Image (cartoon, rainbow, N blue to C red; front, top):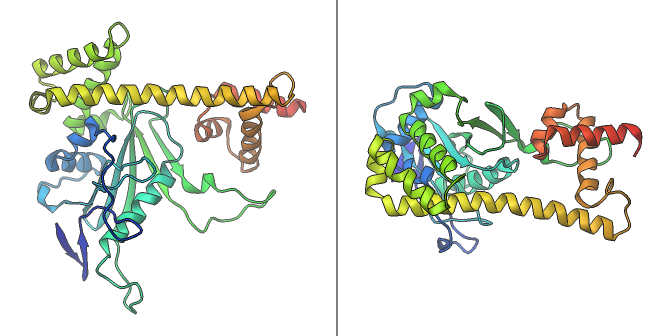
Length: 324
């Protein structure tokens, strides 16, 4: 779909590769329930209205610019669209990811590249760009705040104690949509609320059932109870498959992170470091904690940004204070 705005033509398209050709979709990339639900324009407009407390009714006013066929570094963005002079990039995350600002930087760069592909960057006329808005809908099992901000600048490293105003910044608003969080948002967007009911059913049933049986039971119950019933009825088999993939992926990511941590400890011990105090990843963690303490970060902020438990950060700080 083409769209004129302030003299600049915006085009919905897949991101080009370095050679100018369109990147093929990865065959092993699985879609997600969230992404499929909000590919529907009415659902997407409802979500936008809920987030922004607006009351738009014309879903045709949306210009979808999701990078449909571009998967960069195994990443694929969920939903991107133009509305009301703004560019919104929405992502769903079931595991906490402090690198979302960097991922969104990649996404928005590719998107802007596509939007102005018929314009020249050497013109004396300033190109007009839709203002970006970055949101993550988080529903992982790890406890997180109701609202939080992730900043690209938190990933920047500086020499020594040098501290300066970053020349580049990107902020991502993370909204926790788990039970008891952001209740008003969920009430305003029925699809989002029912999606979370569905997710919670699967999580509940996997405690006592095999994953495939739990997904099938959750789908059938939700259809009977009118929860995402139209979507699940039309896409029953695919919905079960996607649910199994998503749950497996979430579990695999947790196992990978645990394995990486344990491997770091093993390497540290093999290098002769004593008592596991300064070994492998723990040494890196301590250096990161020191940097963030110098920036005036609180224990909770450090734990959130480094994706660690508060108790772990407190222990590291205690060791630092003792000179261990």
